[in-house]
Length: 458
Image (cartoon, rainbow, N blue to C red; front, side):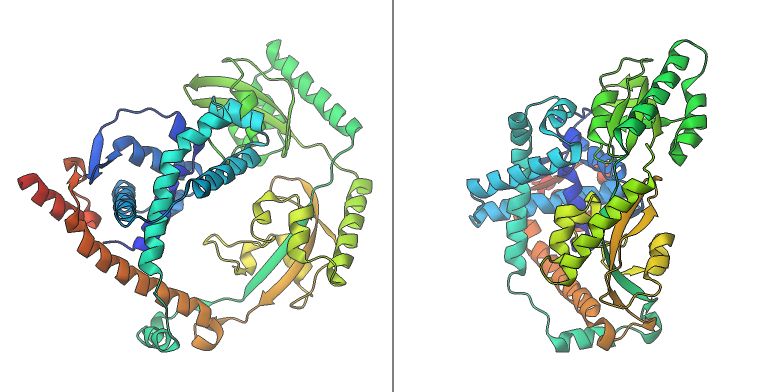
């Protein structure tokens, strides 16, 4: 059985995408069953598609269908055992989790109205669609918590785990840093926005009059590198959380060939052309222009951040609270402003920071908070930020003195994995299991298949 800690994370992809749950339809059949709980082919393929849409292709296992099926088998078994053990998941707890989920989506799409338009359903209907799967997840989490409730790792166990690792296999760590930031994107003044809007409307008229092709204008005038290269073309889906909700809403109101009026998103001003549409998927082209900010606006933002810095330094405003209250960087608000590595860690290497930040922290000491400095984002947007250098390590081979927490976490994960493997070895035979022949080549579910074969012979 594969590393269950990883698969329990993978299974979360089954319920993260709004449109996947409410709107996708593909040729379907039951591919597995645990007890009275079924798993559909669409559960597997939609989950993989959603995982890719979230930009996590690189993290997909080699045989994704097998991995996602195992994740669903695990979740169904945990949920059934939680029901058998009468583990509590109260209605108030479930309602609170649903409300949090809805708040997350409203924040992602910008407003309640845009969310309802993108989903094609009311907030109440969206909540009801999520209720069964969210309750299942909460029951499975409760069972997992019960299995692990008494598991601990002692210093001796950490030392023994570390000593078993061949010395030439110990990881070598480059200098790692913990960096957090408070980001403000100055707003262009109204006159500049109106001027850029008039430019985009002029481009729209050129296409509608037949003078120019939309893709040619996108290559010439769009201020996003990817849009320039592709002629502004994008493949979109109604439920794609990586695309601004206002953009999606405007795009899906268009008929094929139609061009939108100028729309404003958090990235800039756009015009959108609908190329083709099939259900909840569409191909569009867009031109984006980013209204420029003047030195006056940048200096005003610097003054604002420097006053915030003074409050942080004199102890009247915690850095994390300042991030939540003032930062325009939505991605880092949930992490206290931390710049995150791809693996989800707060420790990053110097090459994972943008070049302007590298210059800014060059002469900083651990604990320093920079004065407000200007920078340009990956999308070409002018911004201003405060930078907090929280820690900096020297390059070294892994050892218990410097890396005890990392080694301890790996040792604990291994202990949990063994316990979970033992738990499933004992419990899988107690369930009715059925697995479709399409998944006979999945070696990672061998124990499940053995039980399914015995059930088939009864």
